[in-house]
Length: 170
Image (cartoon, rainbow, N blue to C red; front, side):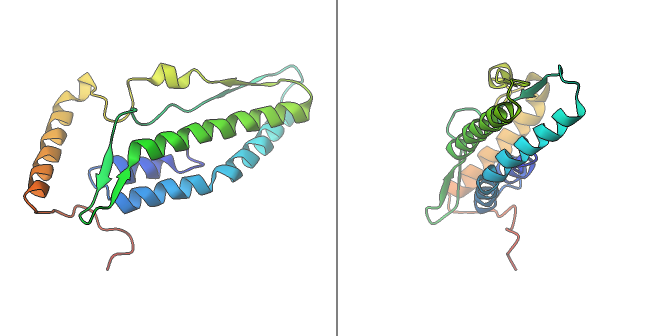
């Protein structure tokens, strides 16, 4: 996740200070890092293997989805719209493909299966993604939802409150 900048994606796509073009830039940046991720993982696995006993095994755990598979869009006036759910889930799926490929390449280079890819994470984490109501956050989520509804009502009236300027703004 840190290799692809998921912390930035969460901040730019889900925080109260989100801005659609910043979110899109964070996702685009992550897509650009996927090839390097696969190579870096293969190299890291080889380095770890060099420090382990010959009978040691590595369990490499997949990442969970960070968003529910429900519609979530960020929009600006003028028709700009970013389908955040589709973009992030697509990135997540491709990331897992690259992780699997790195595990397979490292195992092939070693001539044995010393890395086990644990892919049950998404199923285990299901229901805890963004936009999922958590009982311990009900009060906070209620206030955030009310604020989001207020902003949507202002937007419907043709009013717009800018809560975050992109980095390149003057």
